[in-house]
Amino acid sequence: MIERTPLRKRNDFLLFIVIILAMGLITFTLREIANRPSVLPDFQSGVSEGSITLVIESGESGSEIAKKLEEAGVIKSAETFFRLAVSDPRSSRIAPGTYRIDTKIPASKALEQLLDLDRIIGLISVRDGARLDEVVAILEANGFKDVAKILTSRKPAKPFTLKSLEGFLYPARYSFEPGASTDEVIDAMTRRFTEALGELDLQRLPQGISPDEFLVIASIVEAEGTPDVFAKISRVIYNRLERKMALQMDSTIHYIKRERGNIAVSLAGTKIKSPYNTYQRQGLPPGPIGSPTSAAMRAALDPESGDWLYFITVAPKETRFTNSYDEFLAWKELYRKNYRAGLFDD
Image 1 (cartoon, rainbow, N blue to C red):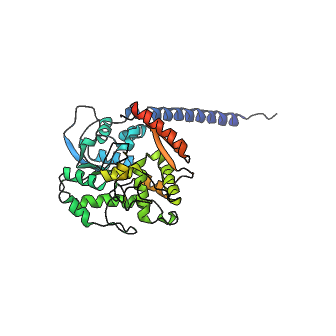
Image 2 (cartoon, rainbow, N blue to C red):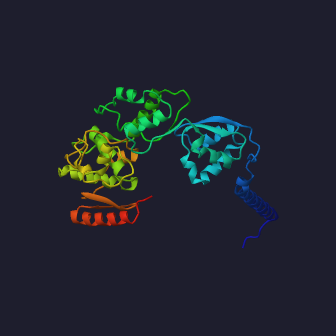
Image 3 (cartoon, rainbow, N blue to C red):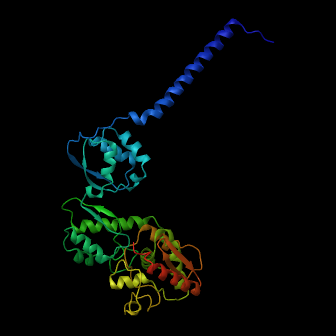
């Protein structure tokens, strides 16, 4: 047994003191971090000093937006806003644009104002799958001039050979400063399309499918379903093309008739004489039937594996796929029953 010297005992005692102090410091630091969100600086309600315009750029991060808000005098602390935004899933819906926003407001109110689309100056919303004529109507309603004329004069860029911008005006929310020209608006929409396309590798297109045909398929996928089933719908289209079956897509009839909101197609509708009538003509229509989203384009490039030839939405949020025509007919009766019961009224 080794006997401890007085010096060694004193060193052990000092080490004990250091450990106790370190534990106290750690405890204090953890407590400070835990309590920090509640003491971060923030403006009180009711002290706003008017409003300003603030531009949120596409692709800006939460910390960049927070810093911009603080520098503009909207909020007192970028960190306060950032912590709030991180904890609120709605913050992911903040859209790019020019906002009319109040100054010297609490971080929570700043977030609410950035989620309020009515505060975006010159906001233009282009719905998913929007058709060319619908975009024309939207722009004209917002005061833009010669929209149809300018669109007619434009042609898609390579590798596309289509003669119209149908399908190339990317669906999104856009914000334009007062005085923006029609050309600037169309440039923004086609640029967004090019950006979305740039995320895909068209070298991987299925054999025999051209870029034009790829876009047509993507537009049908967009019109026929929802993102959760896009890849399966894409596979049905490819399977039918390979078997030289008519596509028989209701969305192409709706395109011919310029209809929205009517999920059914009449027998007379399927007999309309048009190159877009996929009931009467085999293969793809000659052009897109609307502007697809990036999700629909990805599905057109990467269809899900399967042998399906038929699909039908039997109830809201319930789309079924099969390679059996008899099963499809049975599901069609279920759809009709649910339709009569009012399940699709909303």
